[in-house]
Image 1 (cartoon, rainbow, N blue to C red):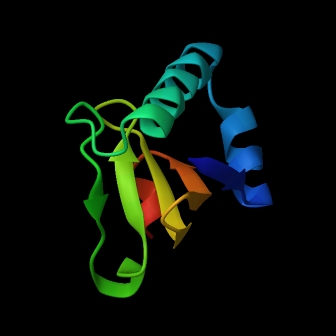
Image 2: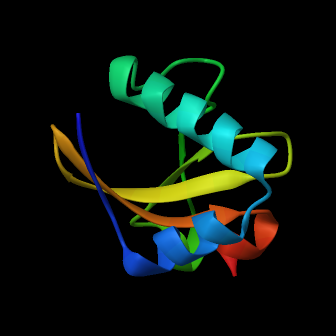
Length: 85
């Protein structure tokens, strides 16, 4: 899986605590290997974000992304539930 990152994602990632950055990297590696791993809880979003998907990093933190193709995604945002606003 080819993953690219929006600049806004990178800025938000850098603001996270080191422990949360580490957990995020572990989840991203898991996403690369097994796209719909149950631990990630990958799901399609609704409403104004209906073109995007999300998966869990921790109970309160998510990564929002969009599929560019079957083999490529773009990570849009990372953070707590504010990423849905």
